[in-house]
Length: 240
Length: 260
Image (tube, rainbow over all chains, first blue to last red; front, side, top):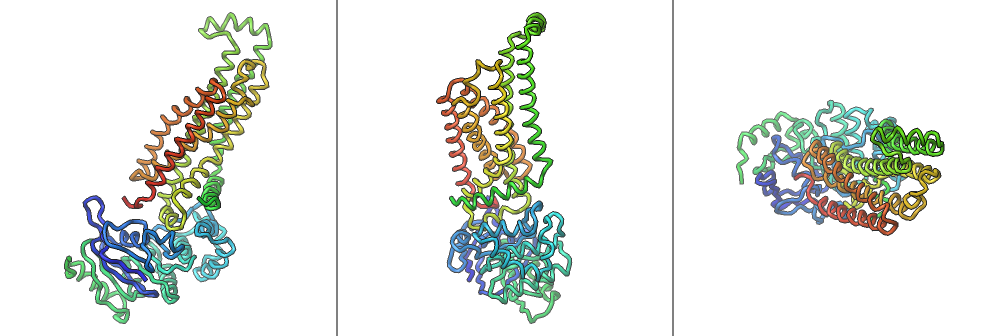
């Protein structure tokens, strides 16, 4: 479903992402881990089509990533560490505004979003301005927006940064449910516990270095993943 | 370009502005103060002009203060200054609104989510500019019309009939030229705020450019008012042309990466 071939991105003279090759199947959850500045966010933005690769190609269901917004409406959902909502607007106004830009009717948006909002515990808050919400509630709404058009691919950049464990757990459950419904999920995170909870695969990314970490969901919780992370950061993952 | 999408973007801008009553009130008060002072000024000159005793007094006192005692000239100057202030404020406010609207999206991190929708860059920019024009245009039209109509009703401004409503030059200048040049300035503000590396730089650049642009455009447009309808219309069409060129350049450059 997602195919990345030799994708690189250079800003001026600084290479942030170097020759990344990656495949993702529908329903698969891939956790992208690595140190700060390692290129995780840039790679996600490249997949979303918001940053073009300097070389290589990124295709989602065969369509170039930078054409995906126009060619396959709503195929990619995005959640970033900043929820990206208008604080003076209510939850419904935010959701309906973004939904309407995708060409959806307001009635359809409400019909589709209501059960998800109920699951995330937001339904009773939707008439209040987002400025009065907690950061966890905003992030849940951001996730609901990303899932609004049943995307094929969901990209998450530190979605649980600064959130309490309960909210993080709710978001992880929602991500697992999305994957079970056939949505491919890529999660860039420093939360190894969260990654261990939901990921099917873990990829380590550090600028000119990227490799699959030999970790399986059956390996267990975060402790082994932390060890693997440490080993890779200390240079066992050789530059190509 | 799809009109419903443009309107959705503009409506969201208006909705957010409506929830900032202090901002809207300060804008309305500014326009009201300008038009109020002008109306009060020309009203006072009218009263003085209709009283021969006052005219005699002014004829003796004003020259001693180095001021011309010609009340008609003073009324014309007041009206002209009011029009110029109204214009420059309208252009400046629209530019700031449009510039800050994109800055606002950058600050709130909503821009990536807007660009992820199938919204075209042209629709996004047009919606933002329409959203920026809305309230300032309404306030500008109400205050300018009020100033013009009251000015037209007074005998002291009868020599200025060609520059007051409903003359062709006035209609071309205020109803076509004003919005046209405001669109140009707004597009300029949007372009700067999209391309500046950070929000503070963008704010400073928007202020810097708008200061000079509003002065130049306001003077250019008002200078044509006394030249007749075709000249005023020419200046308005020139403004539309400038807006089109800036908008096209902005749309083209918005296709680049978000992270530069």
